[in-house]
Length: 290
Image (tube, rainbow, N blue to C red):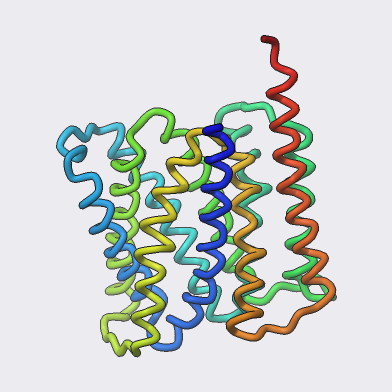
């Protein structure tokens, strides 16, 4: 039962994150990339710090180290994602981000020599085909924005991997606070480094960044961390790839992006990948000796 609740939690995260692509695009109309990141992660740090204030007193070095690794990977993912979003559409940005699906099991194999389930690989491969249908041009070319988003996928793949490993050993609320604090410090450093210190924010910009900071970051990463206690990193990555489907749907509904047959086919293939992944997981449980 806990496992199915965890899967539901991860799907909920993907819906909220899907809306985050639209919110980021709207925020970029009045804010620079690292301004958005600094504000969203500051909000998340304050909220998670308040939620974990009692547990922070007993923090140890290993928890600190784990949280910094998670936060650094998170920062890399979001930095390249939001900079890339300036040069590509929210739907393409969403689906290229989903490439982390295929990277996670290989990171796990390289670093931990963890066996990769065949059906999990099949599910990941299907997800990548879906991403390609939605994101690549007919000549298979990628714009600068698309290339930057590919780098962001690597960052998110490591964040998912680190989360799966560390959440089994350390306290989720502490990990999340350190993760967000690391991300806000790195974002603030880049804000000054790239000269983005002048703020001219519209009401729409504030609403967008409020959604990103409170809902899409603080709430979602707490839910993601808690859910990944019961779902391994490969399955988590494939489920979380559904954010690209919701990102595209919200882009169509809110930003009025054009719907194409390729877009529909890509969505169907990614949803099928999620089903294949979870069927593989169910089969593993049934085959275990009692």
